[in-house]
Image: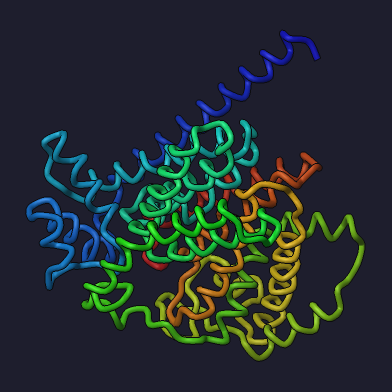
Length: 419
């Protein structure tokens, strides 16, 4: 390939990226004013943002009227931006701030995670729950933003001064936790990843990572002690920790559905049936099927995967169980592929550890929605998409994801039943 061809290819990718980003910006700005606050926005997120706008942050955080189950950082940053521009909080301005957070994630994915691969970018960027948090004032994308920064710092740590890497790892991980509590697994993943990358030996480098992990959890632990739990005392009963067996099926089925193009691609290469896995998947599907609903409660699942399963099984009990079993089978094989990745580097080891730690955490979360699993799904995209060598798979997957994402956002603003 000549230098001119390389330059041309690079330029085309940048132009494609600008077109995608411009489309996403236009999409968000078009839909954001289309609907007043959703119930969660109106009941929790907007009132809490207003509390932070009109009252000192610590007074709100430790006060009796803290109004959401999330940790406080997204609200603090949102209202700080509004104060800079002299604007008072309303749902439309807060959604626009979320939209720009989402666009920053898109930039990081294109330039940092996927080395300018447009097809992988589209697959991740048009995930329905990432898109949802771009046009609705939910906190999902805030956690993903800092999580992505954390992973990129580990990926490019050899290009940065060590003291800077140490500081940025602590800050990015801390900011992720202070955006959503699910990221409390990250210090553990960091320690496990460092241990694995270090040949399972204890030395000064591992002790340094252990010290970093300890520094990361100091502020969150202080906050959780003050709150009397991982959520403010007003929400301590909102999402209790409890073993929910049906969550095993739900998690595996969501993983299988979300990464089905990748796993089916691998199965066509191997041309092999894993019978033990198939039997286990059938048992999960027949006896541990979660109930699909629009509201979260123990034993139920909220999300697009089980809505899809319910639809294609024509709302029949046996059909739902059978289709669920298929996706559980694919989910197990997807996690197997994650475990088999041999790529060197602490970044990959941390990502692999985090996938399984997230899975364990979700199993012990009694009230779970599919959007809560976005951190794990995001990781699976980052680990597995670069391992697809057949570009046609990426093209088709990106096209389907694009159409699915647009349809979802349209229904979100015009159909009260969408989740």
